[in-house]
Image (cartoon, rainbow over all chains, first blue to last red):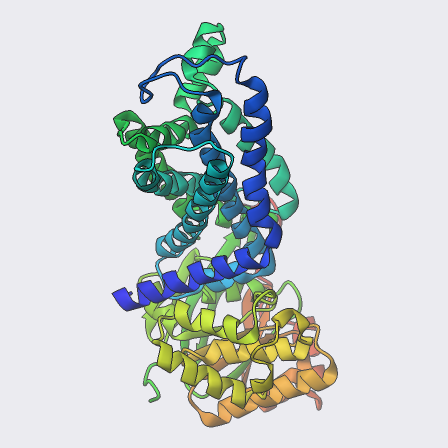
Length: 270
Length: 258
């Protein structure tokens, strides 16, 4: 595979994802409405219930809306990351997957192109939500609009990689909703997106607190939160980078005809 | 330029699903410019064989060479020389005909100008130039197949694999597709392997390979096959061959591990 071939394939796969995204008029709308409702309705209702003390990266008291903003950007990335898994399952059902897997490209590279395309859409949607939140008067420092970019990209890659790894095991589109209920909601609620983790510890929910600490989504949210205030959370960076590599590797193994689940499940079905 | 390597060479390809031998030591060669029909009833192992030929499955034993390149050791070079029309449609129904073709050209790394020129010439060849902007969802089954055939040729493969490509087509579309394939053979640039369970599709073939229970029962011209079976009609020869295969079937009783 030459560099030019690699670039052409990346352009082809990304372009197809973008075209399909623009065809699905409701997708961007729902991607924005979902977190906006959380921000405007949920956060407004709960801002007096949740008192947020001064914890890094914040240097002063902040409103609950400000606290929850990075978490809601996280959920935009989470939903779109899972959407990339849906796109893999859809491609498998429509037969396009065969075309992708018989293209003269290393399989890991084909998957990487899919991941990159999905992440691009994730980041665009996260910024669209940031603009919407700003219109409602909730925002981050202006410098943060730039410093969150690498954090959004890396978090988007991680959540997309989780989606890809899951897509190996989702056999049919009908199973997608169920799988998502067991992935999206636990990941979102058992994380630092909606409340600081010390709140969980303080309230005595030790098991949930521990789970939230090992939840990669918590670290994605913290990476974005710190980046929004021009700071780097080293621990979050390490967990997000490590999880991205791990889940991408799982996806590559899963799509390998010699070793992966694809081969095993086909054999079982034969 | 026609390569001196055979379009396809298979040696001793075997594949088991647990105790069931789907393929048992299959040898098969398709030379450049040759139109070979792979004939077999449902369950003969054709689908497994095609999954292996397209690199989607890995055989338990044996080797697959496409244009001289080993599918296991150098899959990228082998896949570059392989064009495939799958039994199930693999078009993106939301995209236009042109977008589907361009997607394929880019996956194969063709530079933009080459891709545009080849897409234009293949669409012309298959009479679908007027449909370039149509969404593929709106096309008839016959036209979808033409698009898929055009697409499979854009990267100039040396070997073209067509898996039950006429399934679901009405008789005129079927005849039309076969005529296109016969013309491709006459042009002599590409070796063709056409799988089917319909005997009448084998009459145009240079060679017929009969696959039954994972083994090659016969490999020769349609005329030789009729003579070997002692029948007057090709279809009768095929049925006679399946009824009394020259060798014992390859399928072992369930529960017997290989």
